[in-house]
Image 1 (cartoon, rainbow over the protein chains, first blue to last red):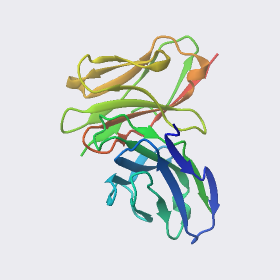
Image 2 (image 1 turned 120 degrees about the horizontal axis):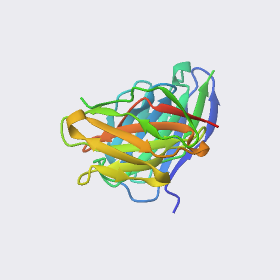
Image 3 (image 1 turned 180 degrees about the vertical axis):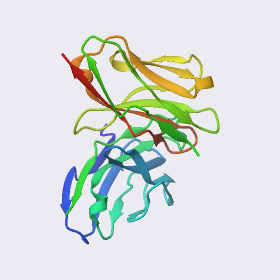
Image 4 (image 1 turned 180 degrees about the horizontal axis):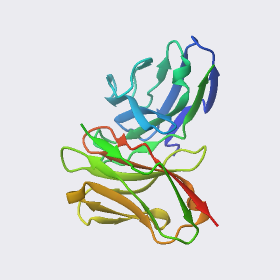
Length: 114
Length: 111
């Protein structure tokens, strides 16, 4: 049971480049989300999805796009990377939208934009 | 809107001493409350969670937390800290919404 898998674990981008952070879960979870973690800021919600075909914005969505074409996958796209997007990104999933359901986190993706 | 405040950015304790990390929340309904721990360069590990019932919850690694509705608090405690407890700790709140995290408290442990 792989749980929540994020790739890549480390990435360096140049300003203006695009990339996709991949997130996959094998637990048939409906609810998936992306957070970014910055020093002194905790984890802030970027986007989330309550099921295939449904996405919504979180606290800090600007500069990021998401889609949810399957239950298993929830990729996060940076269309034109900026240094302000240097951060650690965490994907999470759970059975339902309610946080009462156990939330599983991926191991994180460290992104540096130069 | 829901929010979480962790008043202490950094705490240093001696090994073997007791620990209390503070967490205050703002939430419009009965909250679900969580504590996570993150070691340097690692992901998040769930220490414990409160959904309902007994207000004192036990977690892994000898941690416990007490939910106090009147104070809107969910403080994390450990009676005797070990050097391996040095990490960053995050309190989070949520129910039928995505989790909202505090900004974290970094714990240093000295000999």
